[in-house]
Length: 177
Image (cartoon, rainbow, N blue to C red; front, side):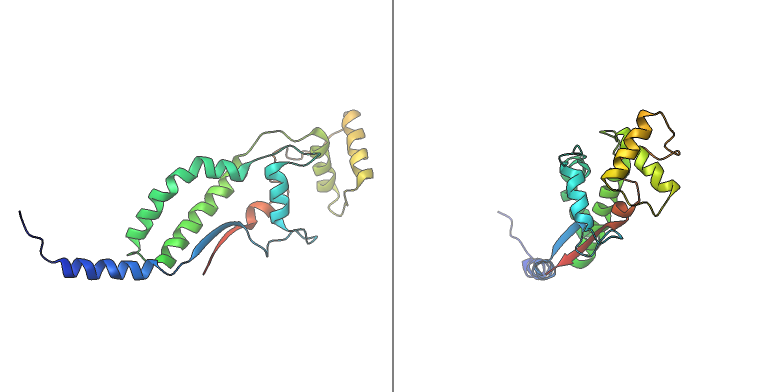
């Protein structure tokens, strides 16, 4: 049976890798606590409503679609990033954070179903025509009436999740100890 030599160097190398990776950091990707809409509403709250729906809005699961579609490849990406950074945990988590962040943004941009209601599109158009418009129950009723009357929506986008762009600009990541 052949002997194994050089084990001390391999052991030292592996211990160095272990030290680099044992810092216990955690990567968080999504909508961090500081992300808010201009009115102070947390972006994470709106993202949750979009993801799971509300009593008046259907679910638009962009985050779950990211995890389902891209998540299976994250392990391989992590391995490649570790190797590329010389097993530097901070650099690796930065690479992973940027990559996953980009994938979530892509999911937001690409989501097209379920479609927005004609009233919602009309509200967007009304706001684009009058940026100071405050949407209330009365405003929603007015938008619904305009739709019923066949009036224009001022060319407003009917694409879900991208009305103001705040949510897609707010996707971020950080690392925690």
